[in-house]
Length: 520
Image (cartoon, rainbow, N blue to C red; front, side, top):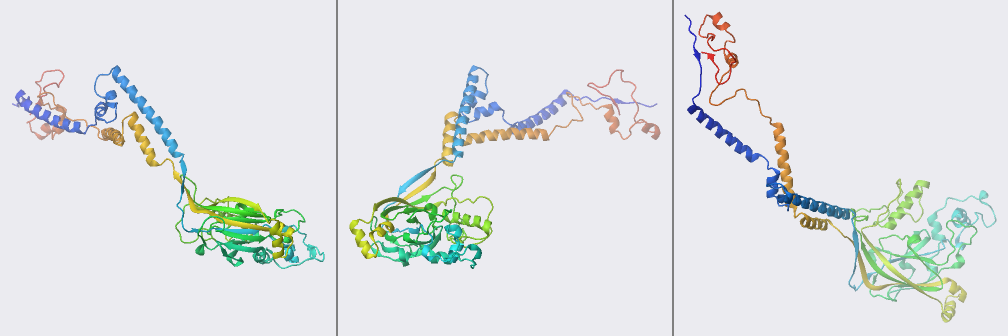
């Protein structure tokens, strides 16, 4: 007779308690570990933060009127700080600067500047040949014909050499210079160098930067004093007006450093005949700020010349280069006074920034009439001229240092980064009582909360397969069938084994609950 054995397993309360305690201990350890890694809430952070007022506005405790007032005070202070910080940032971004002037101590010796002078009349009328008049018709305005009256259509001349024309027809310094003295010593035309400008052939005194002449004292008589004859009888007659027609008589003078080429048609000043002109100079050393505070051109540090045709960069050299490139694009040539470096021109406007370190000379000009009645007769006898010629053609130029001192003018940043940080720190401490470490605390808390939320998204909990209720371990019948090597009763019937038999003695009704029966 087959026997069916029904087994029901129930853990005793005494056996379940140690299991519960063990599971509770495990959960408490896990909870402690998880609690250590869990981020702090806002109240906890506010109570430990060094930001003034945050603990009273957001810390632990009951919500009430006092906390609301603290929150309003905190927000108002924060808004005031942000307003002040925005104003400070705007002031910093405008890059303000100031100019500081520092007079230097008197020096025993000062380097004398270069002095360039040009006769306003570029071509001597008596030195022009028929070919010169023909080639220079657009510049002089003279009719292009020879002395016999032949017109341009019947004239044939070789291509002109402008350097040769300027050298032949320009005013010669040996003829113009009547007297020359520098610091009490005699000088002559050999102490001048020939230079070409828009006025043609000009002359520069003390042009060599390697052998610059020193000035050992200030005041009149300690600089350059020259007497010139401008030779008005050699001025060109005006046949018609052109862009180069000049109605003046006299010379143009520019005082500049040896490293700077003369740009006399824009930077020079005029000296009239019949006057003695006194030019009192003072050396000024200027220092400008580069970007972003200013627009000066910083030195490149390269050994090769920064501008082709010039040994050093200057605004005058840059402007001459720009003029050369403009002429080069139009006619593929250059004028005599332009740098001898033919190359490809640049498109667009030419920008010449001011160098960051610049030397210039401030000038004070005064004049008196010469000659007086007595000296007019003496000069007329000395130079075999009449008194009218002396008054209309002679002039005296006296260039000297006011004193052997120089002025240093330097641009300085009026509001730098250190000042900005100091003002921000003061405003931050005044309104919200914070510092850089307080900002780091807030950033650390934001990172802590964000990182915890990201970990929660990445690590989702898994659904458990088994559950435990109280002290009773239950095993479902379906799980038993799934774990059995025989998925159905066919194993016992087909194999002849009768060890597992169906249970027909359990009461009717829903299964489950605290107990679950199974076959043994």
